[in-house]
Image 1 (cartoon, rainbow over the protein chains, first blue to last red):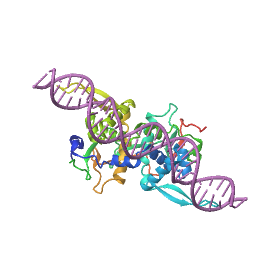
Image 2 (image 1 turned 45 degrees about the vertical axis):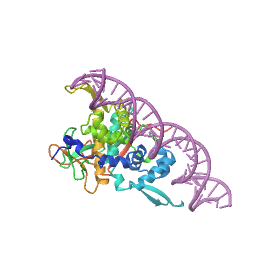
Image 3 (image 1 turned 90 degrees about the horizontal axis):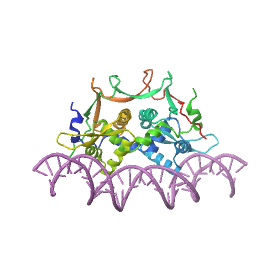
Image 4 (image 1 turned 30 degrees about the vertical axis):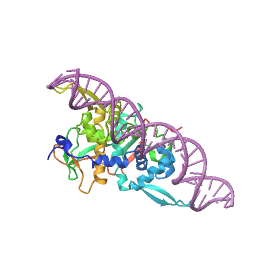
Length: 159
Length: 159
DNA sequence: GGGCTGACTTGCGTTTGCTGAAGTCAGCAG
DNA sequence: CTGCTGACTTCAGCAAACGCAAGTCAGCCC
């Protein structure tokens, strides 16, 4: 299997999955909305207050995220109230949990206050803190330089 | 240990690690530069060509990233050439590998072409594909809803 | 039917990120 | 000393993201 790094410029980056992912969840507020949604927030006002962006920005962002199928806009009704809508995570949205967790881990290490991290995620069963780590399908945990990069089936040759 | 989710609005999100991380690596081009740097790219021209942004944008982004200590600007000299500079990952930058990998995994699953992913990362020792997964410090692999959220030492009470 | 509330929308001005084209600058090769 | 090349910088100009303030709209409550 050829190492992509030795022939870097024969392959196009036009369909790179990292770039595609960034086109969908690349803005600061989208990520913060995902953080809140993964913590259980569902209502417009709660998103506005907890994420800390204005209402117009939030409305635009939520609309985009529903269109991108990260969130679903679901009608609900509390007794004695009229019908409203809440934003629930789809599977596509929920699967961003490792991304958000990796980002939080990194922020905890490299950008937290001296006091320490403001939020701790821990395993429900054993109480130990949760981290995003790299693993191969055979179950080996991977540290730094042990990764090979090769061209996949979706690669596109340049020009 | 209190569950943060039940008392969501008593805590400020001002010092959230996810938000802090996004302030540093939140832009599309910064992430794509990190992708390239983690694949081994070091020189200005190579970054410009492979990331696909213009020279002015690249120069600005690289300057920011050196200031943020993600990259280091190191002089080097090829025989018969004059001294130039290359951009090497710092430890802080290298530790974004789980974030980029999680993002690539997600893009492969939710935003790739029908043909499949353009790039495959595999474990050097066994050849199996690499994924970002969630694990607790006790070694348990975590699936979806098994995470508790609690306030950490750096939490800030609102107002 | 007038008020209240949650969920937006409209309007306007600012900042940030980017593009393209052109210019600069350092130093080795000839 | 002139040309060349890699690594930028400068100069418009554009589009997206965001903030603030104000307006709208849909019903249930009285």
